[in-house]
Length: 120
Image (cartoon, rainbow, N blue to C red; front, side, top):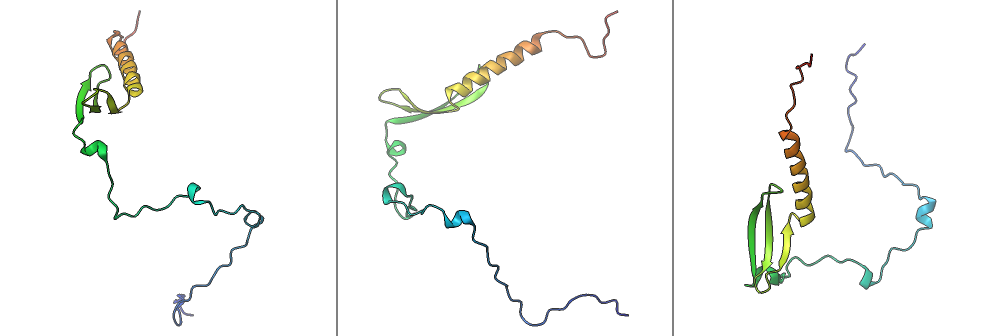
């Protein structure tokens, strides 16, 4: 008896096509052709982007430390009006971080006995 149980291919391998069954949902589906006003097209990468916000001289960027939240804040500011154009992280996130930071600080300031101490 032979101990060689390997199957050796003969000739070039051929991919067998698998026919997918067409479901009832595919037969009754709504057409996906949309009018141009509702469709999305791929933008040509060779076109230039006009980003006036980044190229205008009336925009400044700053970073500062928010001590209450314990995080660095990045802002883009309109120099003419002084208005904040964009900020990361946003003010709601900073308020949430400051709240939880204050809770953590109050928890750590409460003196507690060690886990192995006993009151007798």
